[in-house]
Amino acid sequence: MTSDDWRSRKKAATRRSIQEHALRLFAANGYNNTTVVDIAAAAGVSHMTFFRYFPHKENVVETREYDPLIEELIVARPPHESSMAAINAALSAWLVAVLPTDHDRILTRVRLVMSTPELRARAIIAMDDTGDLFARSLAQRSGLPHHHFGCHRACRRRRRRFHRRAASLGPDRRRRPRCDHRRVV
Image 1 (cartoon, rainbow, N blue to C red):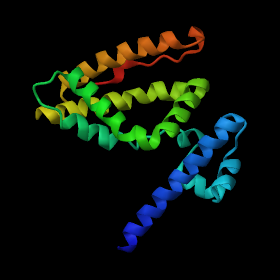
Image 2: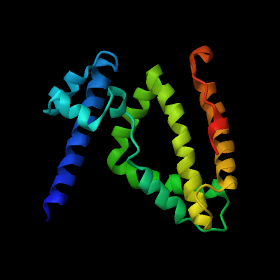
Image 3: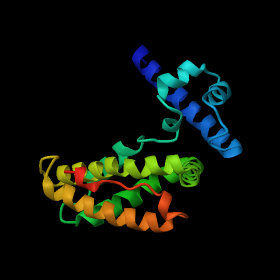
């Protein structure tokens, strides 16, 4: 084992520890009632260490840790499958892979995001990144350049449909943030 491997594992463990303590504190005390100092103390790190891993408090809830796996699963789908079928199958396989170990953490994060307006707004904005991930993966799967218009257009349509469905679930239509889909592609 090299020192770089050890450092990488230690950093990943510290990051995960901070996230787990933050999620636990958010669930117990509420997002707005939990400070960065509270999270750092619970995780056994300084508040400066917290900020080395997460630039803002809300970043501790956001995660892109599953993106490489999702991208790999989409790319591995058969090329004759439709884009939607490939994404659905890849996300189903992803859930089978991660739920046995991360079920409670994912559920806690989803509940927190859905119950906190500022986190919900950030999650909706982050859907653009997810759409880009889907488009990039579909293009790679098809042997097209990652910026191929057809892949982005297909993902944009699916994202709009998802936004409409998600918006209909919100308790207050006036407070829901709007996303500008025109900036994609």
